[in-house]
Image (tube, rainbow, N blue to C red; front, side):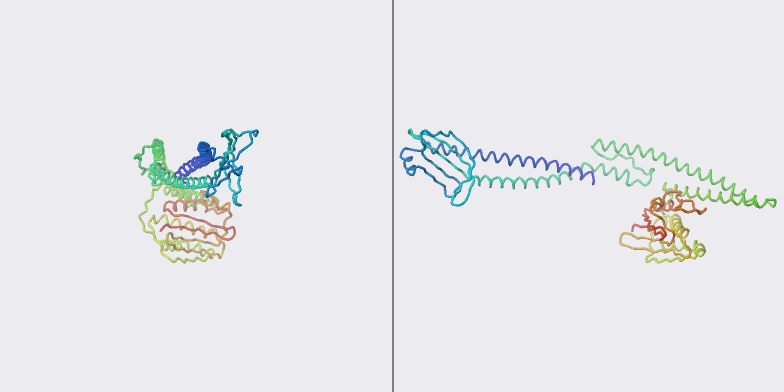
Length: 436
């Protein structure tokens, strides 16, 4: 998950938690405030009722000893009755009770109080239903929930917009200073404009690191050039001298065999050095990409060059390409890539086996498939297939373990993806994915 979304998610969850706590606090407070409001209203009604009573009215109300009255909607009621003088008086108390009214039960907030009027004691009970309070709480709950949802959405949108604005310099640094840099010598040292000090420090640090890498890169290029001259030249001189020694008529058969062995060793050493130099030059982008390359033509060229090896092992070579795919790159390097792959398909094949070249054209990619019926590799060897000097259980003297390492370097140079699948005893399939 991107940092932008993590920050927005953190801010949103934090605010949701705060709003939820405030919502719960509001609901609890509303309940208490509403009950207190009902109680105060009941007290005011009681005062008005007592203040407006006269002796005649009391007698009229208490003709049945107890007076009871409910309003039309059964939301309020009043009970007034005369009590004995020896009963313990109730000063004022509030209770919540269920009362049955016409076969239905309602919960009421009840005020019970005693008062004395003209020497006689009376007990007054005023009740107000709690259903209005419940309706009020439900309304407030829905309103609070709506506010919560709106706040979450609004918070998420604003946080995403703000974090995107805040992290724009960071993504610009990553894009301009890292993603678009193919080689250190082309690095852009111009600072990215930002008001955030942390991003300025990151920009300066990357630029300082790239200066060091550029120095090492140039040193490596110089080293490669020196190695090319200092190692290959003496090898060529030794090779010439040993060949001249073979022309000596006094040379014994034993000496001749030793010189042949030395020439063979020098040849292997020269091949290894050339392979390592090729990998280094490719990885250091010392090649250009000026050519328009035909995949079909390259495969046919390699087939003609390796045809004698196919005949020696009695291998069938099948080319089934649906499309003549072309791309821009370095023709000699791509030729080396295909040569190494087909050479491995021949080298690790079985007698009378086959090498099959096919393709899978698609809208966004073109895939070249090189499959063989050879000895294959197990999972452990497959993981190290592109490691330098990994010979994949080969004891052949002409195997240096650099073929697939060269393939990987050339593929990366051309922005191609290599996928290898293999099973022990069932052959190997290599897919090269070309971006359209």
